[in-house]
Length: 194
Image (spheres, rainbow, N blue to C red):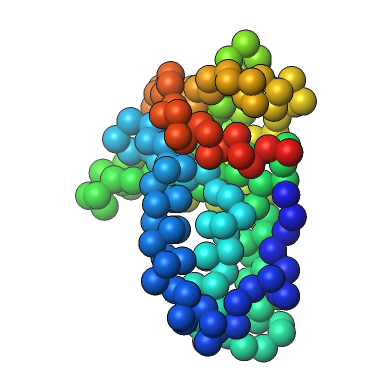
């Protein structure tokens, strides 16, 4: 999997014309690659297309034309593009009520290190979270975390051969597992692997 380069981005005028189709595809892709762990934790497994869309949207919204600004966006979002041997995800902890959210974020300190994937017949892989900067304190976790799940060659081969993958959380305050991913979600994730 390659990183997104400046030359591969659409100019703002071209993106403006392509945006409705781009946006529609991004909404479908994001929905396909979203895994809900219960009612309050959501993982969006990112890919090159979703990060390309995010960059194009940021350039459009911020009206960024200059080289330095474009490079800043590339540097911000390229780390979320899978490398071919990993999955990258954005995890959101969602509570509609602000008071409930504050209580939950205090109880869920460290949850970002307790999120895992488990390929059928293989050991669990726990997320490497927030490599760019720490998002939790001793008193509370953040509502958003960025994570990477490194896969061995055996895991990649098993997935390509049709193995199932479980996604879960071992945090004592939020034990939750999704035993079976929808086939279309799993197929989309497997397409990230080289």
